Image (cartoon, rainbow, N blue to C red; front, side):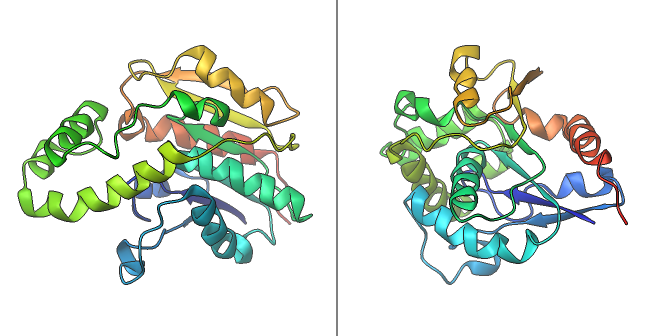
Length: 233
């Protein structure tokens, strides 16, 4: 079996990628990661630092990388996946067969991000509406937003305060997919080539930052294709 380890986006939880599950080949097991402060780890404090998040995820992924595996991260999950692979390489650990990244500019252009985590609640809600991903009934529900906004704000703070440092290159093939209507230019995506020795596969799919919600079938096809070459004994 091959483990598909999914890495959370800002405000996301372990169920964010569940729509992929029925679309995956039978030899692929979905293994979602959960950051502190949400879901089954609600009792733990939120982490407002990407390096701390990566340290936490390193512990979580350890049992699942003894066999073949693949990473998939959307948005913040893409940056976290990059940090994880560099950590795994430095520790001499098994690296993923493939890393699928969606909705994420290259880590080295993080300084170009808009600073959203300091916005007042009303303005932050408007930003979330523009990004897509949250239904209008959630955005207009005061009780739900009082619950979600602190999580999203802390995740955004972690991402926006992250200071990129080049760590060399790893030998992992990357597929980078961004939405046609999100503010990630081809130049902003191109920097992913600085992280890997293998030329990345760059693609676009129709939609905004959360284009993935309409394209899980196509994303599953990429995952299935990338793992099909592995012979399961």
